[in-house]
Length: 137
Image 1 (cartoon, rainbow, N blue to C red):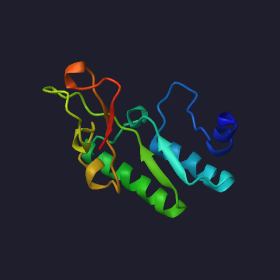
Image 2 (cartoon, rainbow, N blue to C red; image 1 turned 45 degrees about the vertical axis):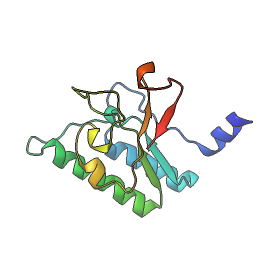
Image 3 (cartoon, one colour; image 1 turned 90 degrees about the vertical axis):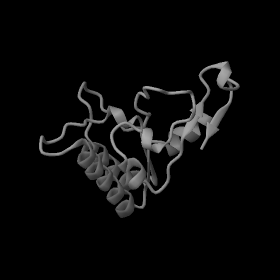
């Protein structure tokens, strides 16, 4: 019954070749899914598997800002919530504490432009706390 429910309400968008999809490619297919299936939610997982090729005159911060603006416009225009699954950058002096949205690799714009942000964290060692505990911040 669960699989039937998933196949009724979830539509996968996958890039089947060896290239990384651009955000424009994802949003184009998502727009078709809005029109064809009436989707109201889009999950991009993981963010770091999107193409990040940018013109040489754009900084990474500017690139991420433009990308997030496109996503926000898509969401507003199509009445569709968009979730990005983004992992933190490698933290040099990580102590095991939960990361925050500023720790996402790429830009502080993930904080500045997000309507909502959720951090899901689990302990990696028993010294940090129970290994079967997940924190949602």
